[in-house]
Image (cartoon, rainbow, N blue to C red; front, side, top):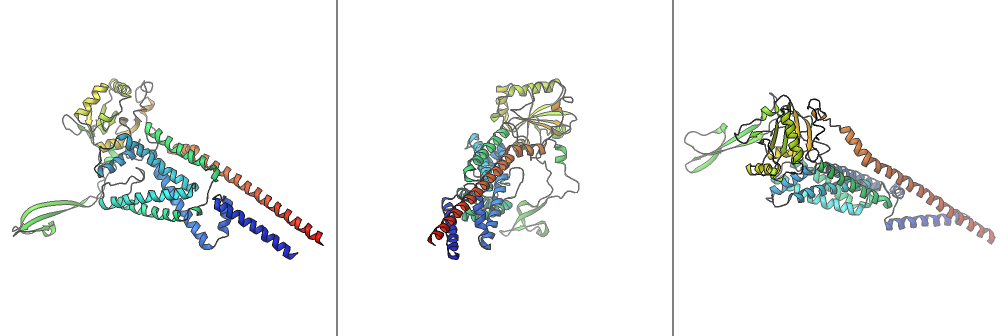
Length: 487
C-alpha cells in the first residue's frame, strides 16, 4: 500500500510538472502559476524578482509621466524638437507638420511603453524597445551634457525642468533598469491575462492620442508655465531687494615685449603692459524672477510699453501670435469681433508678435486687421499661450483668461460689459476635477478590467485544481479496485 501511494503521488507530481513545463514553453503562465514558481524558488531568485519589479516600476512611472506631460502640450514638445533641430543647424528644413506629428507620436510611444511595462504586456518585445529607446536617449544626453546646445532637455515638458547633467544621471539610471529587465523579461509578473491584453493596448493608444488632439485643438489641460491663468505678471517680474545677485569675473588680456598674459582685477599689471582685450564671464548665477523675458515694444517708436500694459487698471486684450505669417487665419472673423467689442467698451486690444513688417502686412491683407501690432520676444510668446494665434485677457496685470484660436469667446459671451460677463472673471483652473476626469476615463476602466481579469483567472485556476484532483482521485480509485481484484 505504501508503495502504491508513493507511485500515485509521483505520477501526480510528474503530471503537474509536465503541465507547468508545457505552460512555460508556450509562454502562457498565469499569474497564479508565476507566483507559485516564485514561492518555490530560492531566496536569490526572489530577490531578483523584487529588483526586476522595482526596475519595471521605475521605467513605467517615468515613461507614463514623461509621455503624458508631452501629450497634453504637443506644441510645447514641437518647440523643443525645433530647439534640437536648431542646435544641429537643421532649423527651417523640416516642415512644421512633421515636427508636430513627431511630437504627438513621441508622446504616445512613451506613454504606451510605460503602461505596457506597468501591466507586463508583451514583455520580451517591450523590454527590447525600452532598451533601444534608452540607449538612444542616453547618447543624446551625453551630447547635451558635453556641449550644452539646449539648456533643458524637455524630458518632462514644463512640469519638471532638469539640467543636462541631471538628465544624464536620470537616463543612466533608466538605462540600467532597462538592461536588467531586458535580461530577465519573463520574471515580470503579469497583471492581466494574455487574452485580454489587446484591450489595454488599444484603449491606451486611443486615450493618449485623443488627449493630444484635444489639447492641440484647445489648450493644454495642465498649464505648468509662468503665464498660467491667475498669474500676476508684475509680481512674477519682481526681484526682491535681498535677492542674490549674479557674480561676474572680468579677465584682461595684456601684452608686454611681445608676450601676452591674462590678468584679473586682483592682479592687474602696471602701465608698462598694453591693453589688448577683455572678456567677462558669469561665475555664479543670481536670483532670476519667474517671468524675466516679458517686454512689449512699440514697433514704430521703439518705446518699451511693458509697464503701461501690465500696470493698467482694468482689462486688456492681448492677441498672441509668434509668427503672423504662420498663424491660423480660419477664425479671424471671431478675432475682429472681439476687437470691435473692445473698441466699443474702451478696452485696449494689442497684438503681440515677433514678425517683421512683411509678416504684419501679410496678416492685415488676409484678415483686414485694424488693431495695433507690438513686438515681443518669440520664445516668450510661445510660452504665454500654445496657440498661434491665441488670446489672453489681463485684469490689473493678472491673466484671467486664455483661449486658443479654436475656442475664442462667443458673441453671446461678449453681449455684456466684461465686469458683468463670465469671461471677465478669472477662470478657475480646477486641477482636482481634471485629475478626477482622467481617473474616471482611463485609470478606473483599467483597474476594473484588471480586477475582473484576475477574478476570472483565479476562478479558472480553482476549476483546474478541482478537475485535477478529481482525475487523481479517480486514478487512485481504479488502482485500489485493481489491487482488490488481484487479491
